[in-house]
Image (tube, rainbow, N blue to C red; front, side, top):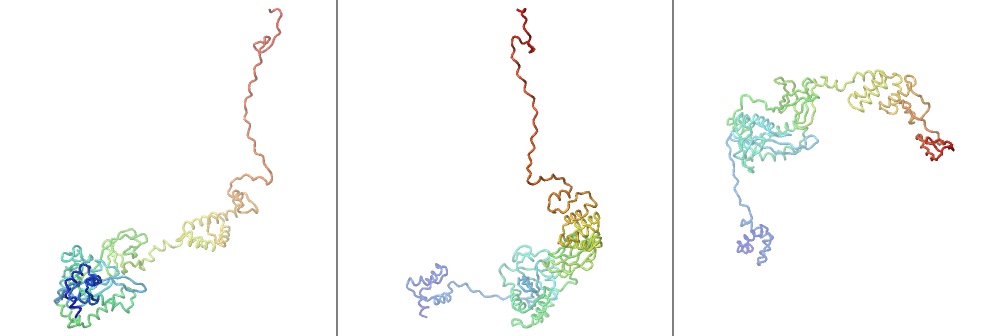
Length: 481
């Protein structure tokens, strides 16, 4: 009391210091000590709480009262659940009647408008009717535009509301208390339903969750005078009655049948008749089945797999419709080679294992060798090749040619020469080669051919007085003077 009276004289100073120190009470304590006011930290915090210093203003919590059939609330929550041997992230959807507190919940791998329409249809049908208003958050799965009071539901969701006689209303952004009827059960599901239970798959989880909701709806609650199911019996006449006919919820997809005879939907592949390969079909997806229409004609129906499962579903009538036999069955050359000799059949099996599929190119080449070469020689060469795990048809072809070259072809035969000898390989292939010079003998290089040149002209003899113009000399006559 003495400390409180002591600080009571400095109430305005404490308020001012609290603002200057930005709510840091340690600094407020130090500032008070500087002016001679000694106070413990715990006493200072208690003083501030008593006088609402730094404390948010308290507000009274409201209470929403709902009449029978007035409102239902819908929301979703992400949960991590162990399904099988893996931990999966799923979306838990819930719908609650606000008056009776009856709850309906299911879990989905994917959450879109298709799953939302299917869930609300199942939940309203299980309740026996719908309330006049459905309170939701501002999720884009249902809301097409706007938020809060200005929110407008999407076209397909608004059509769903008209079918069951209710309308969607979104609460203000951040006002989660407005949808507390549906928010609180999510904690109960996470900490009560998932704990200690094992689920084989999504269908098993939803079946157990539906049974759990039945038990919860049949238990008394402190805030209710009766159990939710008993209150539902009283609320039922005030609900919007169900329509005379409730159509199945489905989505339409246009898909082209691929070359393998399948259509792909949400990463899952569903088999189609072979006659539809290359054609565009209409796929109607519902929660439990996939129906495919060619125009107005229903051609096939599958059980729906969960989106993202990457499953390949083939109906029994599509297994032996010619697609597998045509793709994987043995070809005619392969059948012939297998019937000739076990060695050829073994080589064909190894070629198919190496190349995959039918290995048509390799099998056809081996079949051509069978037609061109003697069977006995080919089988012996293949037997020797298999003994050394040799599958190269080119080398087997060379082995056969070496064995029959002297009988069927006019090729030079070299006795007992190394196979790696390049001269031997050239002779086998018909290439002429020049002989190599003997070792130790030097060969003179060939001389270059001489270039023929004309001889240079001889110099002309000097002319003398006794020399004539034609180069001849004549004796001089004495009479010529």
